Amino acid sequence: MPAQREACLRKARELGAVVIEEFKDAGASARSADRDGLQAMLERVRVGDIAYVIIHKLDRLARSRTDDVEIATIFSKAGTTLVSASEQIDDSPSGSLLHGIMAAIAEHYSKNLSHEAKKGMAEKVRRGGTNGVAPLGYLNLVERVNGVEIRTVGVDPDRAPHVRWAFEQYATGDWSISVLRDALAARGFKSRTTRKVVGKPINSSQLHRLLTNPYYKGQILFNGVLYDGSHEPLVDDVTWQRVQDVLGTRRIAGDRSWRHTHYLKSPTFTCRRCGSRLGTTKAKGRGGEYDYFYCVGRNTKRTGCDLPHLNVHEVEEAVTREWARVRFTPEQVAAFSQAAREDLRRSAESSNRLLADQRRRLAELQRHQQKLLDAYMADAVPIDVLKERQTSTALEIADAQRTIQNAQATNSETVRQARPGH
Image 1 (tube, rainbow, N blue to C red):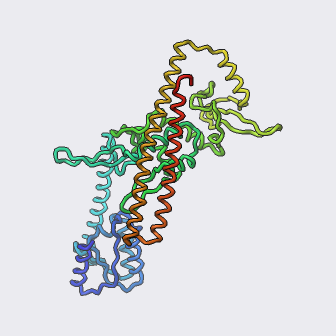
Image 2: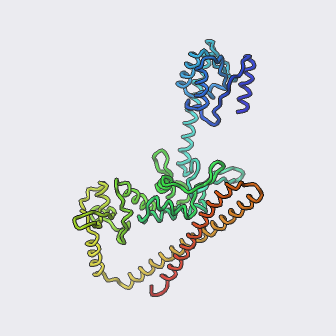
Image 3: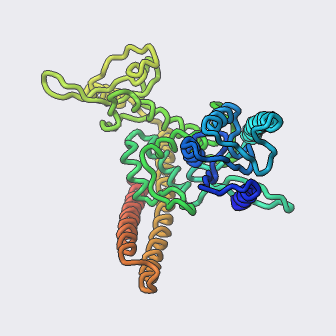
């Protein structure tokens, strides 16, 4: 920008012109005419007292022949001459011809550059690479192999555990987006901190996009097509699909089945007629309010199922009668015991990981709290900023301590359940 400005000022001196005003669009693409600097300049030209508009190069002004014609029309009506500091364009026949040629070249360059960029992005995705910034739970990494810079994507050790936990919890069908959002915030899950943006808890829309992003199961969606990525998946295909099924049932207008929990409700409790999940709801009758199971496939009209609503108490009694007739072999009992022990082991591992994460988080927050106080004592932070940050940090510390207590309680219960006789 400074070099372009100096070239334009030099051209103004050559013309003997007095610079009235300067306009710039730093970082904005010339492919669009809807730029603040350009529009402000055109409004100034329309006043009718400007002899010249000096630009560095024609492709800095516009990269569309349509935009170029519209801008030239405004200049013509105002009696203003467009001058380029780098090209010989003016109101003469040869200058106008060169102007037209350069405008066509600028448009061709822009479209060709866009085409080549899209082609490169498509090829990268086809090979399993990631375009742009990786989603939360991953990090963009740069490695050097034999002096060559290679950009890769790796798992974010701080955020990946939260992402896995979010998928696992939502797949149960017992969470709403808003409740899961608040739980993630309490666990310390935040967006990235950059030079311009401070990381903060994600909102409901961001959480919904996270839960529907196939990137987390190892696939990349590009131009409506799924490609296998070379990055490490954070969730398995089964968990990811269960999450999509739960989200799908909640897109039904007025559906609030996630608010009605029942011990039979699970991904395996399905309609025998069409195989869809069974949801729970409440309906009012003459005698009051009743709980019912309903076929999600019929409710969403995804199947031609005709299963009517089923009274919850009648279903419970039918399930009880069915299980009363079942007799397990010693081998089956052993298999069930092994599965239960495996579930307890996974639960203990999950709680231990959470404990370790939250203890690290608590230690970091406490260090941050001390640094704030030290900065205030050194007159580096004003009192109002100190109070605001101390309040925010104190809330996070309370969340971390509460999460640690809950995880410890879960661990104690897991140990109790693992004892012989339980």
